[in-house]
Image (cartoon, rainbow, N blue to C red; front, side, top):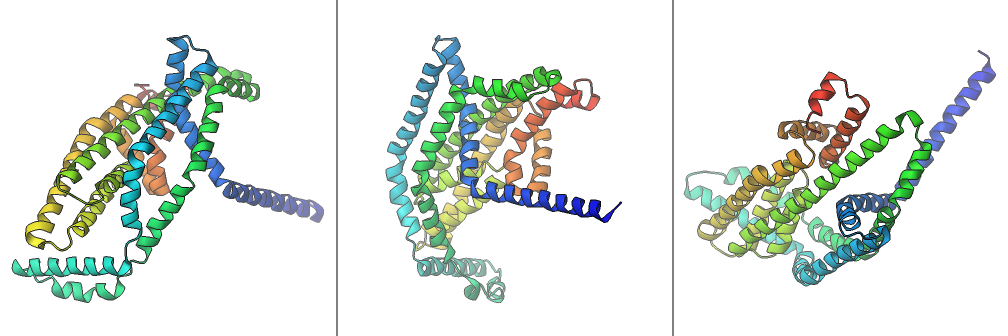
Length: 362
């Protein structure tokens, strides 16, 4: 091997590395566009059953069915905005303009009340709290900054929403053109299998995302009812945040319960710890746990077992493994991605014994 060949190989390798770096940088720069595309794809999967219903049952043309579906989607968004934005604005204003010193004072008062409560019951936790140097380490400047950044993000929500709706419209309207384009670049011997896989994936993920929206809506309403029963301030915001956290399997509900407990205690500052703050927090936690029991035994089995035809234990293991490998993002995408892999595996390797067992319900 001559030095010229080695030099050419090194140059080619460097060129490949540079191209990969440029590609990653390009993807980083257009990450907002990628997010819009992903959200539009999810919205397409959710609304596609309505388009198909209008086309097949009511004999709408494809364009008219898509236009009618988009009107429905826009109406739902507009209705939600008209219903909830005034409430969100008033409550989020209170949260975003919090005084850091006031937060710190309130939390320290809670700690003092907790220490007094434990001492009354012969539990000496005072030394432990003092040794932890919580007073000196407590820095809550990030809370108002975080909340204000959230509000700033919501300010640009309008442009993102318009972009997503625009992309979704063409995904629905021109999906046949996309399919024809994919057909042209497919190997002829695998064309039928790939198209069958796409159809099955579209059907299963449509059911999954629709079921997920229904599940989150049910959880949100139940959380809101619990918080309103006990007169918790900013109940709408707390219920919404905890419901959104439910997207993260297993860990999300736990984090949501802890968040609800902390915000419940802060909302009751000024009351007696033993007779008001502690009992109310316990009742709210019990209410949240009851909601989780309802969700775990009714909503989730319907979504996971019925929508994507997977056993709950199978879903648990896949979610757990994805969490270890890819963190929270892995846990969120575990079920849809695993469903896609199952469909593809069954289509291309139907005679494999393991795949037969795993995909027997597909």
